[in-house]
Length: 423
Image (cartoon, rainbow, N blue to C red; front, side, top):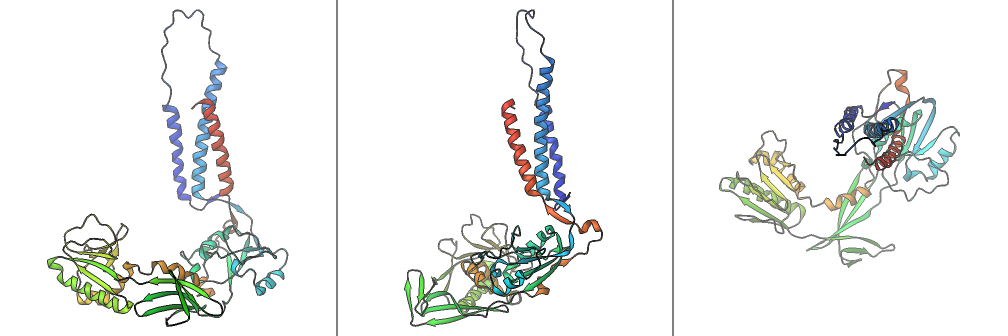
């Protein structure tokens, strides 16, 4: 047996806890005054030994439960002999019903297993309908789990979407060949609309394997508005969300020796207002409040407490890599340096202010769903590590489920025995 995270095995020292509790929790003797011991019988030594044995059995169960919990944390794996000649095929669910893929998989030899590219690697079925399966696989996370497959060689049919990369490039001892299926031609798709003072603006997206492009179009006719949605009147009516762009409110407090920084802040917000085509109002106050403000800015050497809402507070940090950095607290950011013409331009102060405003947080999920950009095989390929020893070439099977079932059974037995002995 090997472990994916052997460092957790240090927690086995916790086995000393139930042993110490067992040895230190002896019940104190109780003195009972009696007139004579003439009528008392000698206790049965066998019965006493049986009681002592049951106590040690309960201790053993509790220590075994702790040991199994530690093993689960360490990720137990069992070595099995792999098949160097067999090839395993994995296919992404979103393309499993395509005719081109089905014809290829149907022609494979019977001894070549075919699984879906998702957690658990369920077996691919010829007549199954996978059109409704919209789950986006995390490619590199699944690569780490491919070590449990018995074959040394693996062929993966995938769309290789950019949004499927959410972790660091992994290492693997499997020879993985990625077959990237080309996506459909890019088509303009209405995404959302904005209700501006000048009229309704429609945002459309065109995404292909190479790029994702956004287009803006001012609508004058051919639509109707219902509450917070806009319906495009065409042969196939389409409804998209309609967002009303409110004025961005900024509360700005500037101490006497931070007048220059205050001017740079106001200039940055004027530039953002022109770029976004959206009104930004900066309120300079002696004691700013967070009421109805998108951002509060505190430019002073004095600390600011009782922060409610989103704040940008001056706190000098010579080691900071950016002008604005996130603090350990939510919705609190630090301005790490005094402002001057050089760092304001070189470190892109307006762009950093736009980032912390978070005006597009609600749109990120919508954009991710329509993003069809693809990676090529070289970008998707993990790091291959050649096994140095024959033993390391063995396939590792995850046995966490079996350990968990055994742990659950022992916990039930321990509770039953504990209630029976009232310990």
